[in-house]
Length: 358
Ligand code: NAD
Image (tube, rainbow, N blue to C red; front, side, top):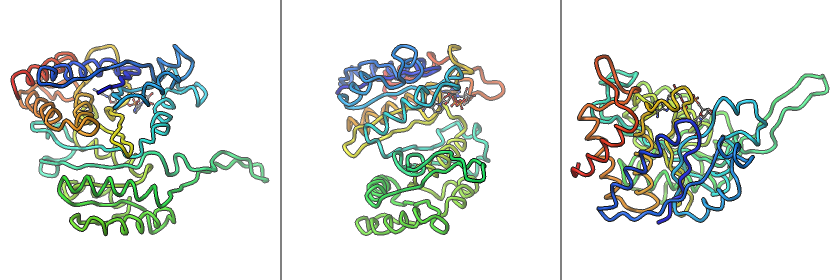
C-alpha cells in the first residue's frame, strides 16, 4: 500500500511524525506501507510557488491514501487567493473527488472533564458527522462581488446540489449508520432553501434501499441547538458542505480539544485523505507541545477505510485509549495539577501501548 504523506505547515510536520511512528510500530504485526512525502500548503508556495504543485497532485493520484497534516499560517493571510495554503487542500479534495468527509466525535475515557459541557450530557458521546465536501455554496457558480447600478457593491454565492451529488453522500450516511447504531439524521433547511428541499426529497428516496436504518430529518438551526442540549441523541448525521462545516466544528468542541479529532475525506472507491480537523496552530508550532492524537487517530481511519485493515485501526484506537486512561495529557488536555507531556512523548506512549498489546 502506498501512502502519500503531506505534513504541510505549522504543527503539521510535528503531528505527522508521531502518526508515522505509530504506523511503523505496526510493521512487526504485518502492516506494510510505502510512504512518499510531498509539499502542500505554505511550504509548497515557498518552494514551488504553488500550494498544490503538479508533482504533489500526481503523487496523490497515484497513492492509495493520503496522510495530511495541516496547512496555513499568518504569513500567507494577505496572499492572493490562488497562493493561499488552504487552496492546496481545497484543490486536492476537488481534484480527487473526495466528496465525503467523515468526522467522528467521541469522548475518550477520562476526557469528559475537558469538555465544555456537563459530564452527564456528554459521557459516552460517540457520533459521526458526515459532511458533503465538494458541492454546495462553497463551489456553486455564479459567485462574486459586483457593483449595482446604484453604485453599491453586492456579494453573492450560489447554493447548488444535484440529485446525484445528494444521493451519493446519502448512501455514505446510510452505509455508515448500518455499521454503527443504525440511526441517520439528515440535516437541512428545507423550510427555506429550495436546494435543501431537494436534499430532503432525495435522502428520503434513498432511504428505501436501507430499511434497516432509521432516518430522521432536522433543520440545521435545531441541529445546532440539539448538539449542545442533548448530543447523545445522534448516531450519524449527514449534511451538506456549509452546514457540515459548522456543525462538525461545534461537535468537536463537545469533546474537549480540537487536538483529539480525526477526519477522513473519501471518494467513491475508498481512496481517502486523512487529517486532523485542526489547523496548523501557528501559536504553538515549533514548541513540541501539540497534541498528536488527532493525527494518530486519522492514521487509524486510513487503515480502516482505505486499507481495510480494521484490526490494525482498532489496535491504534485502543492504544490511544490506554495512554489517556494512564493519565497522559498534552497541554491542551491537561487540567489543574496535571503535568503535560510533549508531542513526541505522547507519540512514544502510544507506540509503547501498541507494543504492550493494548
Ligand atoms: P487551529 O486549529 O490551527 O488552532 C486553533 C486553536 O487550537 C489554537 O489555539 C491552537 O493552538 C489549538 N490547537 C490546534 N491544534 C492543536 C493540537 N493538535 N494540539 C494542541 N492545540 C491545538 O485554527 P486557527 O488558529 O483558526 O488556524 C490556524 C491556521 O490553520 C490558519 O492559517 C488556518 O487557515 C489554518 N487551518 C488549516 C486547516 C487544515 O489544514 N485543514 C484547518 C483549519 C485551519
